[in-house]
Image (tube, helix red, strand yellow):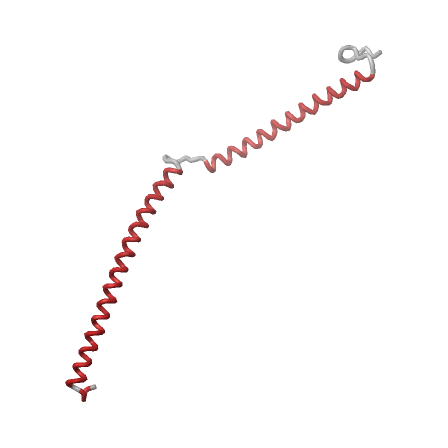
Length: 119
């Protein structure tokens, strides 16, 4: 009979069990220490990322994006209006050019009729 150790171990199976319990405690303590190390390391990395992405502006990013979207909508509306004006001017120019060509053709016909020698 073994008289040393926890609760006076009486056979070798108890010694094996107590050895396994001690080993499990050592592994648990070791993994806890490793976990604490990684937590500190990841905490530093998280702080670095947070510093880069944290909003330090007076307004929220969503509000900024919404405001810019409204401005873009306003610009889009104005561009559509200008495009309509350009189309209207283009139609007016085409009409004026047709009238000018017709008038020039009439003048050429009159000149050919009354001054055939100059043609």
